[in-house]
Amino acid sequence: MVTAGVYLIVRCFPLFELAPTIQDLAAGLGAATLLMAGLIALVQVDIKRVIAYSTMSQIGYMFLGVGIGAYSSGMFHLMTHAFFKALLFLGAGIVIHALSGEQDVRRMGGLQPALRKTATLMWIGTIALIGFWPLAKDAILASALAKGGTTATIVFVGGLIGAFFTGVYASRLMRLTFYGQRSTYADVHLHDTTHGEAP
Image 1 (cartoon, rainbow, N blue to C red):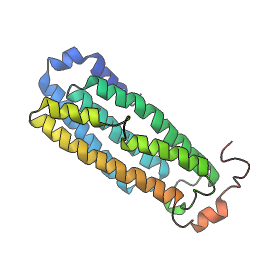
Image 2 (image 1 turned 90 degrees about the vertical axis):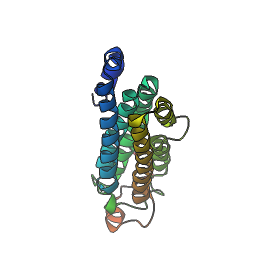
Image 3 (image 1 turned 180 degrees about the vertical axis):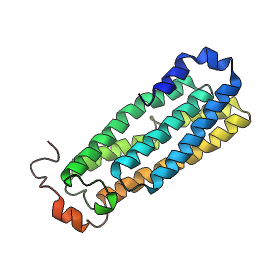
């Protein structure tokens, strides 16, 4: 349901193209959402909240794309986002389960040896989220450059900054969860994972 607005704009694109000011507004709001949610994700300490604010940031990216008329790129990002974000949320669920319900990344750290498969799968989701090819956001940014004009230039710069934020908060989440020194809490509460990492 959270991405229904993106789909609505794409389905009603003839109406939006007849109202270029509204289309520019959608792109501008998308860029603002992308940056604001990305900044919030940078400072979250709850593993699920980082991923949730990341979702809001990526929805901003989708609105940015469809707002500048890159409908297929926006829908492609919507579709791929559904898969890699589901992977990240499932991985977060395994981590939370392994730590008896703990969601604070400051009480994690060093979990990679105990949760190797989860860490590997979450890295796949993280790399996709950051935007490496072929799941890149390049098509949206290229469309903004191709469109030209003030709004397109603003959303292009916002999109680049947002992509940088995505890389920072996504890799921060992985580092705090799986690498570094294991916290005392994790030492005490980590379930035995020799039988498997998740039910």
